[in-house]
Figure 1 (cartoon, rainbow over the protein chains, first blue to last red):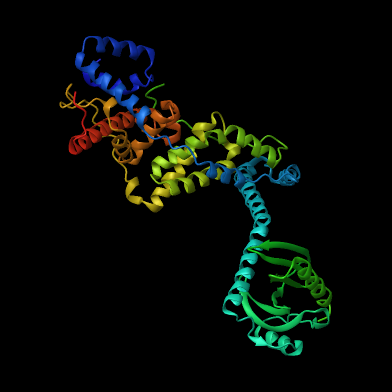
Figure 2: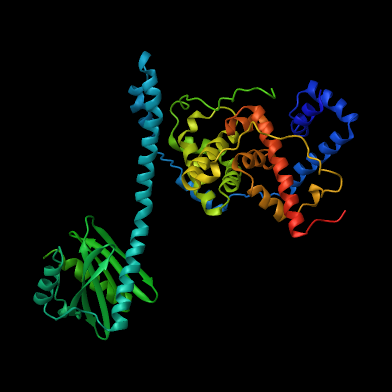
Length: 265
Length: 198
């Protein structure tokens, strides 16, 4: 073994990657060559220093959680889905095509599941965004004391005014008999669309009722945010979000009245 | 076999166990592949040299690994790291093309240079930060074999599979990486004057 070859094999030697025959040969060489021994020692020390001092970047726990959540696991029709793809299984010379199709099909399935899961996950996020939007709108109106673009207690004034400026016609009910005075209406922009805001008054309290068309029915849900009571439901193709500093009980009354009246346009 | 010149084939397609549901598949993936998530992130972090990019690339790579999970044969760790490594280089080519410019493997100088006398600073006295900076400063193809060998303790054979080069190339790149690193740290030490007196 030449010095050059011995030097070349030193890295494999200190890594324990040299086969036994070469190892014996190299060790014989090391025994009679002090400078090669020194080089070997420096190399071992270098390796030990890297192992000891180089940063090991463990994955952040949040990242691992995110990745685990992003891996689709859809329990229901896994086997059925597989069975349905059986016809793709190869017969003779189509094997190549099918082998290519199978990963493509499973990729498509995974993408579909991801999309479905994402839809499910997005729903509460959307409600949360709307909650923040309607609350912000209500607080802005309170701060500037500008609740309505059209001030009128007459539903037949408020409704056409809103209808003329929106792509839909919000139900506007006269609830003065029940103690909720219509004060007017305004326009705002919630959840990426223009919406109608009906403004009702009860004693000194103002209630903002945000209305826009939605597709599904939704039973009433209540929440409290920053001291404001919020209630929302969807009926007869319209979604309603009520925001006020009114007590929960009175806000419930108004929500119930609006739900009853929304049936009759 | 040390100096075999053929890259070791990494995986081939075969179908998944029949009638496995997606949730069973996910559990199997979590048990065999996700224990190596730290290794995946560590490699991505060292190759992208940035926390946020490493997170993006590691996440994308692991989800890709899940899609190709049926192709896994043998050990999960090198299989996963091969996917991570490829994702990193794809990402580097798109975002930092200058960093993937190849160095010729043929021109490797392995002989110790003359200044490697007993007076040079011993590696055990290297400043920790300087050493990390020096590793980060290595060209990517030397950095990756060094990380895989020293921090992941992988065999040359597995590194060859991950990097997709012959085992002999792994050995020469590793030798070159250690040599470059020693020179780089010593140069930095003599400039900043932090060399530990003998």
